[in-house]
Length: 128
Ligand SMILES: Cc1ncc(COP(=O)(O)O)c(C=O)c1O
Image (cartoon, rainbow, N blue to C red; front, side, top):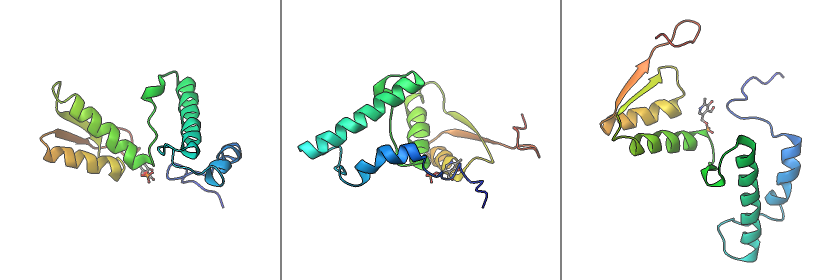
């Protein structure tokens, strides 16, 4: 089989699996728990967050882990829309966007935002 849907989900990299296995087996504590078991999980999450921040050259507090793309998309679009609504309430997106994006935009439309859903050409590029 040739798998061509890696944007939907991707096979875990063996190196990532090796690093993650202890947290899926023995060290499975909730990182928000205040007992020693939880604190050790929290330390591991903190290290991962620092590594991500170093990798992309940002601050540790700017790294937010989400459960998946839909949650990340909701957090980003609603967060930006609400925080910058004093500067403008017009969002431009594409008709071909994933439903996770389109649904948030349709929701924001009910909250008074103007949404432009731009069409695309046959090749999928934006038809400006
Ligand atoms: C472009 C795009 N956005 C969003 C999603 C939704 O992702 P999730 O299932 O992680 O919420 C997918 C999933 O296939 C996707 O391909």
